[in-house]
Structure formats: structure tokens, C-alpha cells
Image (cartoon, rainbow, N blue to C red; front, top):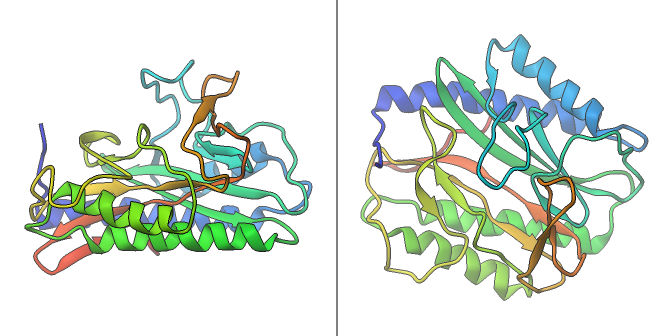
Length: 255
């Protein structure tokens, strides 16, 4: 069942989005050579707790997860595309990392992901991040009343694939609201003009992921959570929670 949100409910989700944005800012500031992924998770926990919010990810156990999720953020490094666990791994110079965070305030969730480099960046990583952000941006632009869900995926795949990167379509975006994951599914790649008619009040998380090697294959790591590029190439993941309104798409996961 797809639930459309009122203006007041979207405003409530905006408060959760501000917490997600604050987590991203704090984690980015703390991340550095020698810092562990677990330490970044602790930074995120502190931000969420001090905001009086809850952590959407902690204890979450979807069908594909081996165990209830142990952290409040996903920390995906280099060849890990999605759902990387906050382990004792220490960040190294040149690492590429994606930070995925979900938070809720008064029962309303928001979900977002940023990707960045640590230390001295590789030019190819900066390009990968830039294209991923452009991919997300055109997906957001397509989230307008009267459009189709396929328009979002078509716009994103045109940019991502146009740059020569691989994309997978099994882990995509989703509706969000009282639950972190709601209907509908938001594909990373689709045919334009097809799929669900987009309506005012629909709130979705749009979250493309790109693989530098150009292939679409992926593997699950032994930890039962981390989704890795099939060829081991470096990967990025970016995401915003977006409300479809009469005035166009409104991004909720910003400061």
C-alpha cells in the first residue's frame, strides 16, 4: 500500500532529514586516516541521541540481512557498494567511503547517503562521486507530479551509464514515512514513461549506486550484509529523501 503524506507529515519528516544531514556532516568531519569505522558509528550515535531522534538502522533485519543490523550507519569502503558494517577497520589514505544513515523523529523517518574520500583523493574517485551526485540530481528532478516512476530510473541510468559506470537494480530506492522502507520500489534504471504515476504527497528515497568497473554484477560479503562490486572495482552510493509536491521535488535530507 502506498501512503501519500500531508504537508504537515512532510514537515515532520524534514526534522528527521535534518538529523540525517547533521550525522553526515559530523562523520565527514571526523573521518580521517587511522579512524575506525566503528568510531564513525559512535559519532553518528551521539548526534542522533543528542538530537532526541532514533536510529532507523539499528536492529533492522530485512530478509537479505544475515543478522539484525548492529550499527546506526552503513560504512561502505572502496569495493563495498552498500550496507558496509561499522567494523574496527581503520581508514587509509585514499579510501573512498559512503555513509548511509537513517533517523526518525516522532515516528517519521528520513534516509540519506553521502560519499567522499579520505586523505589524498584519486582523480577517478572524485569523478565517480561527481557522476553519482549528478545521477541523483537528475533522478530528483524527474520526481514531479504527473510523471512516472520509470522517468526517475531512466534519467539516472542515462547519466550513470553514459559515463561508463555499472549499475545494479536489485537494491534501489523506496517509499519512506512511518516506516523506513515502504512501497513503492524506486528503480535505479527503468524505461521512461512507465510505472507508477507520481503524485503529490509521495515521499521516496532515491539512491543510485555506481561501480567504476562498468559491470553490473555484485556479491554479498561473508559478513552477510556488505554488497560488493562483482569485479572488485570501487563503488559509490548517494541518496536523498525527496517529497513530491505541487511545487516540484523537495529534498528533506539537507541541513
